[in-house]
Image (cartoon, rainbow, N blue to C red):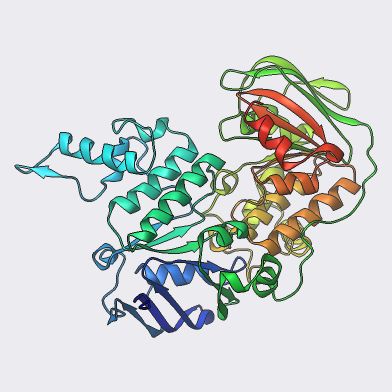
Length: 496
C-alpha cells in the first residue's frame, strides 16, 4: 500500500513572547485522513502551535508547508480557509441571535441576484445537519440551543467549510456521551474521505479511541511523536508532566456534623423536589447527562436561580440565599463550569483573586489596602501554585489550568463551609487536575464540604463519598462510594 501524503508539516517552529520561548524548534506533521493528537500540560505550547498553523500568529523562525508547498510567509487567519484549514475552538463562538443555518454558513452565505437565497441556505443546512446526525431545524435561534448542541454546531460549521485540515480543540467538552459517539463516528467517516484532524484534548482516553498518532509538547519543546499503538495512558502522562503523577489522593477524611441540608428544592427551570445533605469533610458527587439538572442544583443553592419551593439549612439553621453575595457571606461558594463566568478575563490576576472579599481590603475613604492585598494574593499564588510572572497580568494570559486555580483560590480565601464545583477539571491537564484534587482533600480535612458536579465518572468514583445521579430534573439514585460503579451511574443517568 502506498503511504498517504503529508498534508501539513511544520519544521523547527520557534515563537517567543516577551523574551520567553513558547515554542522552541517544534516539528509536527499530519497525514491525509489522519487524526493526530497534540497533547501537553497547560502552558506546554499547544495553543501557540495551533494558532501558528491557523495563521493567527507568525513564528520567529521555522517553516510551514501545506500539501508540500511552503506557506510560511502567506498564511494568515483571514486566508486559512483558502489553504483548507478550519479551527473549532474550545469555547463556543457563535452568534447567539442568529439561526443555526446562518451560523453554519457564516462568511459564505449563498447568494442569488445579489441577495441571500434563504431556501438554498436552509436546504444546505438541512443536509449538513442530517449528515452530522443532528435533529435540529435550520431556523432555530442558536441562543435556544443547549451548550452541547451549540458545540456540535461549531464542529459542523468547520465540516461545512469543506476544510481538509480541521483543528479540534477540546471538542467533547460539554457534549453528552451520545453526542461524543456521534462526533467520533463522523470524524471516522471524514477520515475515510481524506479529511485530516489535529485533535487536542485533556481527556486522554479519547485520544486512544480516535487518533493514530500523538505528539507531546512540554515547556514549548517537542518531547515525542509516537503511534498510539505503541504507548499507554500512564506512559503518555509521564511524557506530558515529566514525572510520574499520582492523580487521586488516598487521604481518608473523618466526617463531621451536617453542614448543608437541602429539602424539597425546586426551581422555575429544571429541578424538582431535590433533597440531600453534606457533612463536614464530605464530598458529594452529582452525575447525570447534559440537561439533567446537575448545574441547576448548584446555581439554585448559590442564589443564581430562584427557588419555587424548598428550603436550605446551614449548620442546622434555615437560610435564605437569594443571590451569590448572600451565599458567599453565609459560607457557600460556587465555581461555574465556564471559566469566563467565574473570572473577569480582562482584569489583573490579583483583582480576580480578591473579588469575593474586596470589602475587607477597603480602608478609610474607600482606598484599597494594597499591602494587605499583595500579601494575600502572593500567598494564594504560592499555595495554589499559580504559574505567572506577575499578578498584575490579566487573568486571560494564564493557561486554562492556572485560570481554574485562580477561581478555586479566590473562593477558598473566603474560608467557605461548602464549595460547589461545576466541572472543576474541565479542559485542564492531568498535572493541574492532580493539584486541584489534592487541594480538595486538604480542605476536607479542615472540615469543608463539597458538592462536585462532573461529567467525568472516573472523577466522581475516585473522589466522592456518595454520588447523586440526576435524570430529567429529579434525583434518580444516591449511590454510596462502596457500591458505585460506572455501569450503575450510566444506567441511572439514562433513567433505568
